[in-house]
Image 1 (tube, helix red, strand yellow):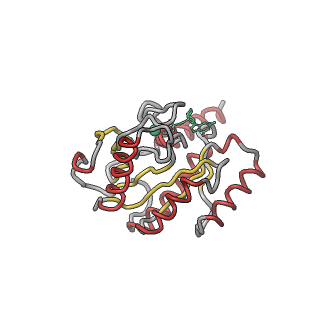
Image 2 (cartoon, rainbow, N blue to C red):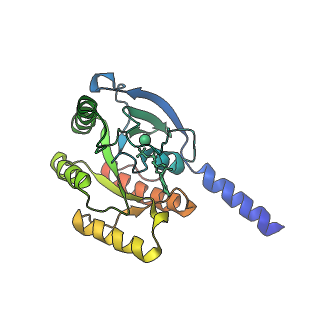
Image 3 (cartoon, rainbow, N blue to C red):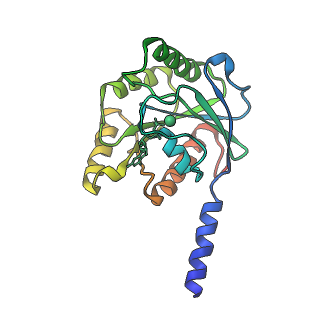
Length: 216
Ligand SMILES: Nc1nc2c(ncn2[C@@H]2O[C@H](COP(=O)(O)OP(=O)(O)O)[C@@H](O)[C@H]2O)c(=O)[nH]1
Ligand SMILES: [Mg+2]
């Protein structure tokens, strides 16, 4: 009985520790972006890599970002207030072959102008599918990310699709291919432990960029 009560209280405390997240607005082009107020963290990755699912899971609100099993659905940058001190931005996914030429150009312009010019951008959370390390679109994104010189926190998604040793291999491969100083965060929206691991890494990473220590 006592231990059940203890577990319940611990669970409550852990979920209460998540910063409260609220949708702010969407933008289709640079001139539509909201006025910069607080440090922003962009979620970048290929179409269908799991960006929206990651946002919903890591922020503990499954209704926050719209997810889809059909790639190429999100064409806007979606802004979320996270706690009081930061904003997260769900960017359109890159590399979806079936998007029309002009749409693709608009998305790429939005991603590039946001990441290159946005004064409040503090860092990029870069998502890659743990099963496909080093695919062409991610290599291209890497070349561009290296050139714009933004801090990057790499996250490997859909970890539940691999077993433990395959995960370790992929994570090491990503570290080597992209010359990361540390292995990426290995993430699955089907595993609660992923969330805690992510937040631990995120706060250390953010502290290194902005000097802000601890939770929002
Ligand atoms: N098995 C598994 N599927 C995932 C995971 N994350 C996302 N997905 C699935 O991948 C598909 C694309 O996800 P979504 O979040 O919409 O990707 P986005 O286009 O990058 O925003 C959806 O069918 C999700 O259910 C994960 O950690 N594990
Ligand atoms: Mg999405």
